[in-house]
Length: 336
Image (tube, rainbow, N blue to C red; front, side, top):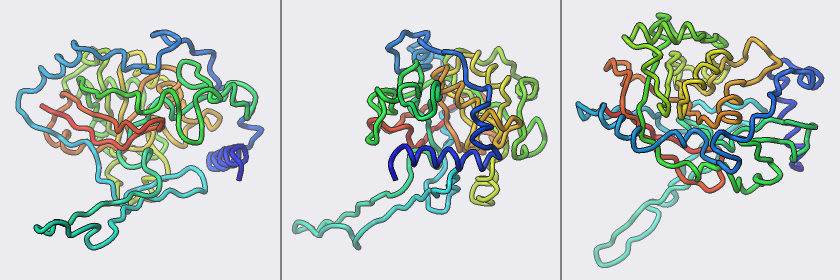
């Protein structure tokens, strides 16, 4: 299968899943006006990472008073949910060949094991989206000259079957900043439903319930919100994979206006999927990654933070510097 047929076939499968036809997608009014050059200049590849500096590091460090570390990541394993919007199913397998893999060597008869991972990795489990993850088809369908990424970069210039020369996850520096968790599920008193949207009013009310306000969200913060959907992880993988609750369009714009460095949640999207407008797919992914250079983290586990009643913390994460990759497996953590 050549690249164009594979790309178009995946797009058609995705539109069928959403209940769209090719004609319906073509008439969608969701293509944004030109969003480039970036506020940090036409050559910028860092996006919202430009908001991080010594002041943000020191502000985060000042929150560490108890010396407690809270793991926000999930275990990577073969029976974790592996959602896919196309017929090409994902697979994650770890293999340790041999028993052991090598040895013994030396008079001390040392042996060791090595493992091999096969299948999809950078967009499964607790994972981090780099700016190369998504683009907008800005011109004629299939024209790679007008497939535009953050800062207007064109696929024909930066993308290949062996990764991206720009915007890859290798360009993402380690992140240490303030983290803010908004527990929307606690405010609602339940796990949110599939396709349920979160409004600005919901976010504000959830913050108030925690004794906080939107003034507590500062430029350069990492902003997280809990939908309760993560309770389905390895409990009902089919339901977990079937869709997501998430931020509505106005809430996505509200979050972007807060000038955060990344947005994270406990499911696999930062919007409701399927959404209320079938002609507008994943608008917050498009807003955050493509237009604003705000990073995304998904499939997080907030249970330890919620159990401890911790909503403001120092947040730490370092992406694997996989050259040209569209994302990274993630092991984020909070410190108080």
